[in-house]
Image (tube, rainbow, N blue to C red; front, side):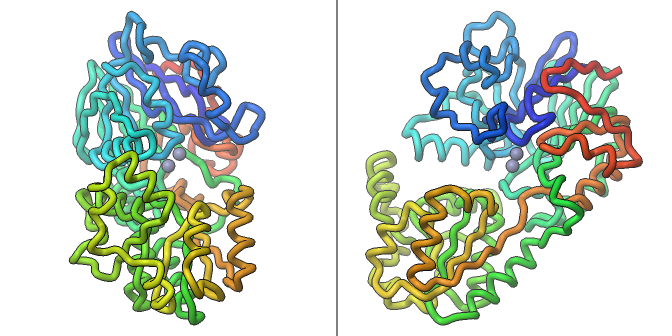
Amino acid sequence: MNFKIHRGTKEIGGSCVEIWTDTTKIVIDIGMPLVELDGTQFNFASYQSLQTSELVQKGILPDIEGLYENSSSKVAGILISHYHQDHHGFLSFAASNIPVYIGEATQRILEFSQEFFKSEKLNKTFINFSKSKQFRIGDINITPYWMDHSAFDAYAFLIEANGKRLFYSGDFRGHGRKDKVFKRFLFKAPKNVDYLLMEGTTIGRGNLKFKTELEIEEDFVRVFKSKIGINLITTSAQNIDRLVTIYRACKKANKLMVVDVYTAAIMQEMSAYATIPFASKSFPEIKVMYPYYLSKMIADKMGKEFLYQFQPFKITKQEIAKRRNEIVFLIRPSMKLDIDRIEQIHDGNYIYSMWNGYLKQQKTKEFVDYLTAKGFTFHQIHTSGHADIDALKEMVAAIKPRYLVPIHTFEGDNYKSIFTDTLVRRVKDRENITID
Ligand SMILES: [Zn+2]
Ligand SMILES: [Zn+2]
């Protein structure tokens, strides 16, 4: 068995690993980069006009024989670890007849986002795998391990062929709402692994122990109760763990949770796969707000029927104004005009619940300034979607690989000094490694 990391040995983003035997080739993840080669922010808009072959030539798309249309050989399968852009963002470029092995909820989120933002169907052949259930592609055996991560339905993969074993950690953590999933993983982790390719997103932040989702649930409750007035929160609609945390904090503080129609749709879609609250008769404390531009876009792209499915749980701007002291309202910078139109929205709490790196973006900065000028008190309540040093060490100790390979990290050179009981092998992007 051989492998090649196309991108990720010295950066976060653009995740893509090629694995092959004499007869079979598979690819794990086909992500979009987050940074350019010079470290500046990656923006695909500046490459959009280029052909697939040009994108490969420029090193934007991975150079993998058989991955794209019109090639004679074929990649036998693509595995997608989870629904974050840096793991699946370039999937649309792959030849449409290559089967894509994916978790069921992840497939649904990808399809939903494609319909929602691009009004088109994903032209892919999806095959759903099940947690811990081994499957086979050619002479390669694959076992998906369910992981705790800020993306719902995230997996690590054990890859086995010709008596050799490679483990790809994907993105994971041990302090989320699925912390027990991680504990269980440590207990039954695969042994005799030759190579562990392990993410290290947060290496570089020191030995900091990260707060758990349960701890930040209490932080939310405290802030909700700290002041009279409305509570506004900015978070990612796809961070299901965080939505559940906020919902539970609302219940504890006796608040109504108001989400926009996009977030409401995501929660409803995901409720098919786990116990997730969503706007319905079963969760009367969740209300749906219809922002002007978003609603117009949804009506155009998805149709009025889709738009009005949450009508029974709708809350109007007037009602938000009237009940402001009992409301927790999930907003984003693009909803500034809507907030402008709600009367008496001032002097509450504004909670930023995402990675603070995004706070540097101009649009976000202006939004924070706009709310603080209205008398809002600014708070940050967040915990990372990725493992802290302790959890990373726990994974290495549970698997005890022959070699540990840094991936999905800017800090690969630091692995040696952190994982001192393990042989760290620093490989380069696009270096062929034969497992012998
Ligand atoms: Zn991720
Ligand atoms: Zn990632």
